[in-house]
Length: 308
Image (spheres, one colour):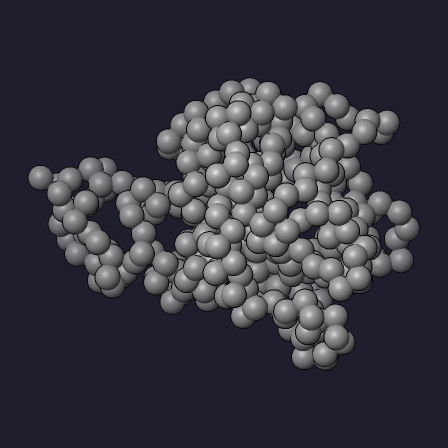
């Protein structure tokens, strides 16, 4: 790996953002991306004008707020005739919520190198994953130019911006994100628009853009002919910070994709979603039996050993 993890963690703490280049090996990204085409059309198919490919993208968002049938309702977003840097409805097409019908993508969502980086930067091993989804964009879908903003929609109270209270927002790049395909523009901590020269958060696939809620950033238009950009939202908070949230995982806990994913998890991985670890007073012999019944194939031995 070409990145100094500790230096990036310190950069996130002091600058408010960092790009951890090559955090996940490219070969692991490439293997998982082969499963991406079950959720999105291949860029060549979309840009060929294939009606089925276009319809696949237009209706594929599993976040109902961004489905075309729901876009007539009020989201506080502008219509397509808005001019300049604006939040437009179609900018948010292409959101597919975790868990996915894809084993490798599900495992990528909790990749140990990403989790390790978040724990180091946040100075805690007891963290929770609170945003998990993949997001695809294609040149020509809309004007993706956004105004500079801060992500204040992740918490129901004002942000407490000091060590021990920060949450980590992040994008794991599933494709190379470079000029022409919409690398995020971002300002360093303490800088604010207008008049401040932004940084480009470009990076190769496998890189992770980590930022905090107290830095200004914006989405950038895709201008490359036939261009596309795919990433995975991975955001973390400290355990017990109930005021921070975005995606709910419990609503999918009885679905097949979640059951298969959960069966592949260690106790530490399930704890990222809030599951009690072995040794927690929640667990009894009967509940461990029920865990094995619910997630067929899970290794329940850590929970059983902890009861001793």
